[in-house]
Length: 483
Image 1 (spheres, rainbow, N blue to C red):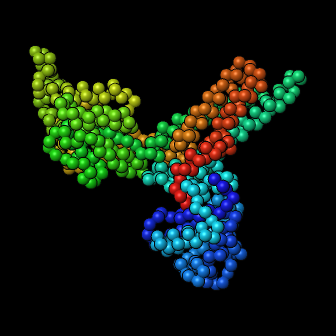
Image 2: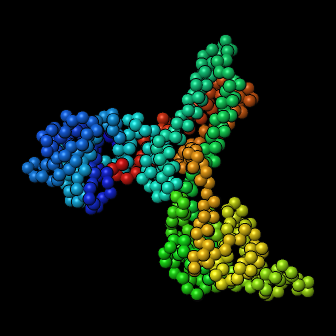
């Protein structure tokens, strides 16, 4: 990309609307804007003060295109750090294109994706992690993801990394200085203080790395797989959670043969609910493929909800489970349903030991209070509801929020959400641990300096102090045009 020319783009979504904003940035932004803007008061736009707004008309020769407001932001006090002019025009797609085409004829060029923010980064208006947070802010769809992006855009994460990097850099400078006086055998860097610094840096890095698990789900939403046998009410529960008829519901077992997904925000956190095909033995090839996909979705989910039909379990079954017959060993056909459910629950726990599992009894509207109490005594931590009537659904959503660590978010702690940052932190921690091992074993300063430089390199990757065109291209290619 060329970064000294003038660029133009539509800064609002394309299509018809009440107002559209067309943004110009670059050395010639004021000159180009002045050529096509005619103020109602006769002022010349490029001579006006920064951060002022002016009413006037966009003129293409003698032809008036629109009545607009022109906002002036002079360098370095603008978003990009360059001269910026923004035209607020009427939201007709025709008007938008006419003004942009006029700007192009006057010498501007179309901006690339994310080029305004790229220029802000290159001109020192923000560091790279803050620039990435701009894209996260635009993409945020829940209160949690919005708060994370705002925190990072304000520089909370950057300042913490910068502080650690500066402290490490100070010690690195002293160790490098020792190399110049190798023959005198002097130590400028206090090894005890350096040891304490390394331990503190490692502790902070581990905390930031651990926060990624929370940050990733808060940013991208929490996938919740609803699983169970056919016809237990999984699709009905999905519809109740979403408050719409998203999935087809019928009394025919095996209606859902593929996964159905939809998103909803609960308590400011995004959840992606996945209705899966009922798990059972089947000779139906298509249904079998759906069941295979069910297990794939369980593997991808953060939380698993195992649903069963409580109305199929009679009180007599529960009594048999509590007092099994010595002659039959508790294997009465009446107890088979509850036994099978218990086996399926144990299978899921053993196969996915790291995943939170919620066991939910559905259709409790058909049961007596005594029956429900007996059922809860048989299955630990059982959650009961009726997806059809909505009883207990709200309590279920509250329970799901307990699986999300929002405490760090409420306490305004730094939370890592970006995979690139996570990778750089892992590499920085690895290098810090190497420095610590070298220090503990009495390694010479020149060898310590090598690992310190690598740690500093990975810190710099996060904030953009160390970057290359390929990295910047990959990051800003994901931005929208006009930002």
